Image 1 (cartoon, rainbow, N blue to C red):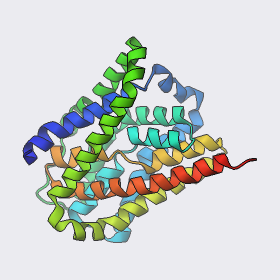
Image 2 (image 1 turned 30 degrees about the horizontal axis):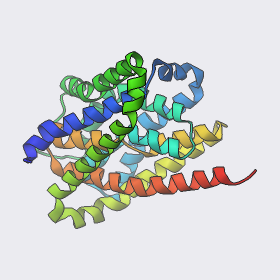
Image 3 (image 1 turned 135 degrees about the vertical axis):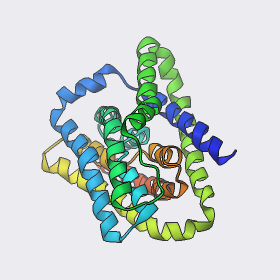
Length: 288
């Protein structure tokens, strides 16, 4: 598979399929949860949309990242949530309905915020030669691979509920396979420089992941939210949509080096997610 075919065709289609799969598990009720859990929703969205890019920016300065590494990390920080966070929340005994609602709402909001944050990063970190994302066109492209597939999935779930329920497991499995292929493709493209990239981007991406998980959890705890919601907000704050980030870097910006911190983050994310799941399932199993 040629790189141009991968980034121009397979990657957007794979992301659209993953988002359609997410839509199969969504209902209108998930958006009504904004009014049912206003404090939890507002905190989760604030952590995702505002706090996450700010932490990413501060870490870039603290670790001294520049150029493509810095822009790649900001792309990652601009892409919160995703279907993976819903699964991890479910396995961690968190509030899955809240997690799904946060992912759904943020998917619509980040359509606007992503091009603004990414363009800021490109200009601020002086990544010469990179394509600046045209805001209007980028919004249309992101809508095409996220919002529209999610909406189609929601319609299918509403219209054919039984069929959607049966399709949920195989679609999740296929989505996981696509996700792995995307990560491997991004790594293989830059395999010769991977050790240097891992040394440069590994610590900062791991720190971003852990810091946002911890901050999200303790903010929710400070606001006295129920334990399950604390878990959900932690995971939604700390688990980013790597697939969308790689598509933005590789397909829209046509810069494969920018995908490296995102791909490395996506690998490390599964290690920390396994720890989070283990901690919360063990706590839930302890007799009270």
